Length: 395
Image 1 (cartoon, rainbow, N blue to C red):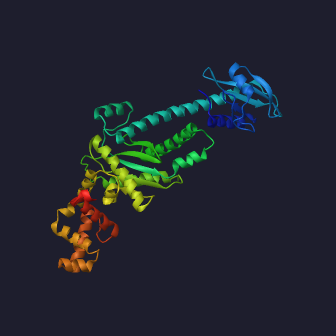
Image 2 (cartoon, rainbow, N blue to C red):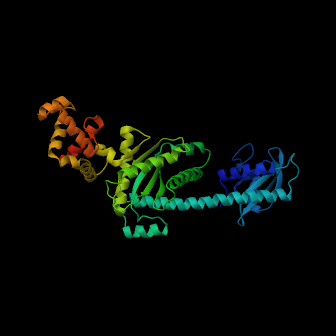
Image 3 (cartoon, rainbow, N blue to C red):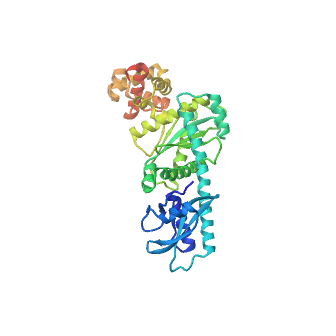
């Protein structure tokens, strides 16, 4: 184990505040990690101390400087340097205090790193559950129990995109190595994970994971005894809005977009819900832009423009349009209205009905399928759905 640049700087800053002295910290190869006028300078004296384990006093940057090993858990992990100057002699008490401060900071760092490592394990597992080409359900449940993740509850998936998060973290820490940047990103994403959990009272049925590329996955528990795919839509939309609000207060300074999947029973249904949420996020963002909540049902037949399977598109077309397809009169009315370019007068003449009767039927259609044929976006969705439902191979 060795100190990295970020951890060395943290020790140097904190110790400097307490001791009122400039602190130099070098790694075991003699490279200066923190302090001094020239970062990353090779310090031969530090290398000597790292190799011998004995203190050395030499000239460094025009100051007499005492170098000695920093020992943590019986191993030398870095080399400290204290310039001798106007602040008086370096006492044994000062050295003991510096050693103690450094040990506390290192302990906290590696404790947090272990927690984050466990978090990465859970996130990787959740990602495998939702995205793997195939899974063994019994094995998944066994592993989930070991990791204390509840996948046996009624749950649906939402994906939360925090636009530009990774780029900002890496830009802010561009002076660090890729590994150290990843550690900083892990800290930021775990803070967001914790905020999402707290927004839902840390209820064990809610699982949060960071999947990379600015995307967080929230597996949301759904209570109730008579759950169906359709009667959970409002609940999931409300919870998506709550998740968005939780990340706005305090503000992250990033645009937040949420894709929401439908509820389907069992583990296979959870994987299907993830695909729904992914499509809703992708299509909603492209069609209407970032910064909103998009449920797969409301994105509707715009998914025909996305790389979803033909079976999934046909299934969603049936879910959305089935109430319309079961009413022969409404079905014909909508077809004629769409073919008339959304012109009420032309459509009424072709149907041989009064204009008010046509309006009544279109109002009824809106109530049945939550899409209004008189609005261009909704009419386009209905048209796409009908085209796909009637001849999916051509869409």
